[in-house]
Image 1: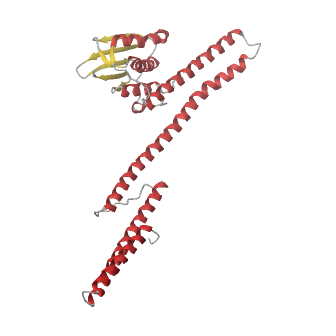
Image 2: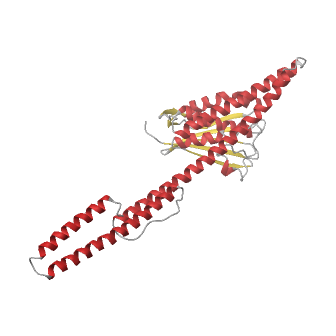
Amino acid sequence: MMRNKEIRLFLVTVVIIAGIGILCTFYISRLAPLITAVTSLLLIACFMLYTAWRYREIGKLSNYLRKISNGDYSLDVRDNHEGELSILKSDMYKVTLRLSENSSRLQEDKLKLTDAISDISHQLKTPLTSMMVMSDLLRDPGLDEGKRREFTRRIQVQLERIEWLVSSLLKLSKIDAGTARFKKEKVDVRTLIQDAVDPLLIPMDIKGVTLQLEGEPASFVGDANWTKEAIINILKNSIEHSAEGGLITITSQENALFTELRISDDGKGISKEDLPHIFKRFYRGKNASEDSVGIGLAMAYSIMKNQDGDIEVSSSPAGTTFSLKIYKHTI
């Protein structure tokens, strides 16, 4: 405490003032200088004791901050007293809580990032291994031409799968980072559905799936391209789980609160165990196909939520229905 220059200066000043006061009291009476000296000493002693107490409290706070800097957020420095130190303790505790919450979120983000990297590595490893084997076989000059064409086609399929995975991950990362721009423009639902269905006509034709459009003409204010991406991913899921010659129904309706799209299929449905998890990234239910990555529905979910929309699912052994709601906005 005495190393503090301000304390030393204060004591010197107080002693000088007390000395002057004692000298002045000689002119009053003989007892006055003694009373003045005792009073001055008592005041100085009280000040030193009070200052020492404050130094101890500040020392505790300093130790508290050191523990926080080392990652210990479980301490509680608050007290129920009034005064500047109590206010400071309360503010420090609030900051500690925020740091603890931020630390927890960062830890969760690290775990999610680790899991995502692990999942991505797993998804890429299978097609890459397959392509490496087939490329080795293609080096054989005596390989049958039919096998050569088949291996070449399989490599092309695997490359397309990798390209789709990378493209989807880039889109998701843009949404997560908040750099994806969602426009607010008037979108005609029938035109949007047609644009979303066009890229999937061949897979639907191969599987013999019939598409049926129902409902009234509708529109909404949102981003046509991103919403189309969400619909495409849901339609892919519906085609994947539809039986040969199945039926997919898209129903549209509009009311004063929202515009709704319902995409229904007559497949075998989603199990109750899988239903709460289907919008999680890289989640593959027990009915998922071998080629399923588990990212399409997660992307659809992120797209709808980032447009202040909503997506719900209901399922039974008779089929699955996805409901996309786009709430009313002004342009």
